[in-house]
Length: 389
Image 1 (cartoon, one colour):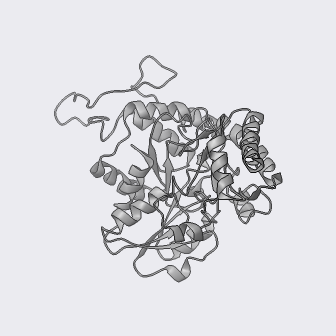
Image 2: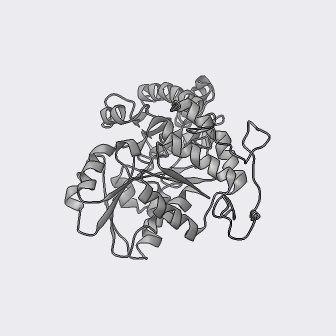
Image 3: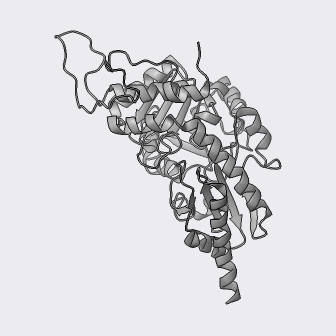
């Protein structure tokens, strides 16, 4: 019988311990070994060398695969390692349609490495622009985030997938911001889903990891071959940390989203906040699409304040909230995309996407919402005090 979502977070689709755990441990064991002995020459073994396969990594892969309703999932040493391996799927001259509002590290990879190796990219706003006019005979994939990082734009995944597949084009979706708890792109027609496992899947800001989830056997076989060749496998202990983190994914996402809604309401009413970017606001351009294709609006908020000075004051004045670059953990974080996550994106491109010196990105954690709000209030008050001096 298929398991429900919260149960999948603990067990995957089935509780498959096999002969890996003869003691029936509730916490899946860490197989901290580089290799496995063969019983006899020529005998096929389930595990031989940890770079290729390891029971602890296999377990977390099965759980992530079940959460995304995929055919197969592969765990990498980081989200960027997963994306770098994926881009080896393509050959020189291949054309990729990419969202223009992406994590800065992804854009850096495309421009510094993939373009050097002969791939061709066109960047478009996949939340607003049609892909048809960008398609060429060499177009092989559409790569997108939804919601985007950091401007929270929402793309209709099914609409993009339906158009792309008419031309035999693959659709790749980075699902990090919503996690598989709130959104499943494969169910909407995507071919590959990416996760930075560092973020919501781990959820505790204590390890790094990444995942590629394939929707078909053919794609999965390609991804496994790339994984074998590139060698950036997630280590057994880090696999266990993410496996442990996923057990609480459902409760963390629900609590953090509940907090996010309260913070959004506070920001919307703050006169010094000029705009709040969050798909859960009813007048947000992505609201209807997000409501249709996801089970929640997530825990990420981006907002624009009235001046760069105010933005810097808030970032430098928070005490309970952490000023840090990541997202998706139990602690609330604020980030300054202009100098952190998107520092290497050219200024004109950043500003075209709306990333200015007035923009702050917030990853909402699971603390008491009143403590988060009190810290925001005192940080804004610091700006008022400066003005009165």
